[in-house]
Structures are given as C-alpha cells and as structure tokens.
Image (cartoon, rainbow, N blue to C red):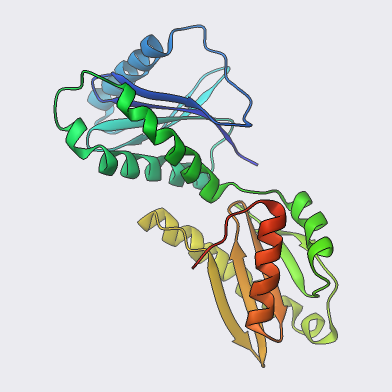
Length: 250
C-alpha cells in the first residue's frame, strides 16, 4: 500500500511553513536541515519550471521520492514510497485546505510560521480520509462483528477483490454482475475525487429486491449485499467502530 512519510509546505520563495512526519509512518532521515532542504527543493522546482514551462510533479532520489502539488501561493511536498492516485489527491487536498485556511496570512508578509502548526491536525485528517485500514484487519473484524453474508473487500488503486465472504445462492448466481457494478462505482469514486477533491463514501443501490451498499474506507471498499439497507448500515457502523474508523454521513 502506498504511504506518505512526511510533508513539507512551503512558499514559492522557499520559506518552510510547516514540516510534519505522519504518525505510524517510517521516518525519513534527512542529513540537511529542513529549512535548507525545503529551500533547495524550491530552487529545483523554480529552475525546472523556467526550463520546461511546467511544474515538476515528482522528484526521485535514492532515499526518497517527493510528490509535488502547487497552489497559488504554496507548494506541498509529500514524501512517499511510491506514486498512486490517492497520494496525488491527498497532496491536492492539502494545498486547497491550507490556502483556504490561511488565505489572509499568505497574502501578506510572513514573519511567524508557528501559526501554521495548527494545520497539523487537518493534515492527519486529510491523510486518514484516504488511508484508513488494511484488508487483513477488515477480514478479521467482519466475522467478529456480524454474521452477515455477501461481504466483499476491494483494494485500491487496482480495485482487485481481496476478500470474499460466504455467499447465499442468489448472490452466487449474480456474482460477476455484482463485481462489475462494484468496480464501476469504485472507479467513479476515484475520478470524482481527482476532479473535485470531494471524497464520496457511500453508495446504496437495489437489485432484484436486494440492497447493495458500497462503503469506501480509503484504500479499501466494502461491498455488502442484503435484504434491508438499515440492517446493512447498522453492521457497517459496528465494523467502523471496531476498526476505529470514524462514521460517515454520506
């Protein structure tokens, strides 16, 4: 699963506004002071932009990869292990939220960068919106929480099925159709998020008097098929609570 280790947010002049290492991620040791390092990366981006006329989206080195997202006033530099669509969406969301939150501060002369530390909680929230829980944990939690049949887990970004619980005869008969519907919806999630930075979390549809609920948990999507929507949603709520995932209202 692609992960982000840390993030730097800096002005286009190279002033480091915020440097944060994500909790639980393996830290990236830097030999250079973060302020000097961010200035160096800013210079690389400026030179590349002048030379090519466009923004460098990734910087690849032996011991780190940096994903770059540009705003009106800032760069977000996301230090990652490998590229993915989800990580691009994270970086874009960070740019948008940061510039919206500090619109007034970024419009003037910056003399105190400590005010930007309040954005750390939002950094974790943005990261958690997309990367929450792995399939192995979900596969253990689901039988503990509910005996409901017809549960599948799809892993992004390739959207392949990594868990397939017990099926009843009806679902077994239409298994391929259910999978095709799920994959189309998951892909639409990704396209919608990439264009709007809004992360749709739940889809409810019906098929031959059955309720189908797709619940996006970030790197994975759960698909439940049952008789009653309310019953499925109650079980999803218990699974979220057991996995430590905040509830969604969407």
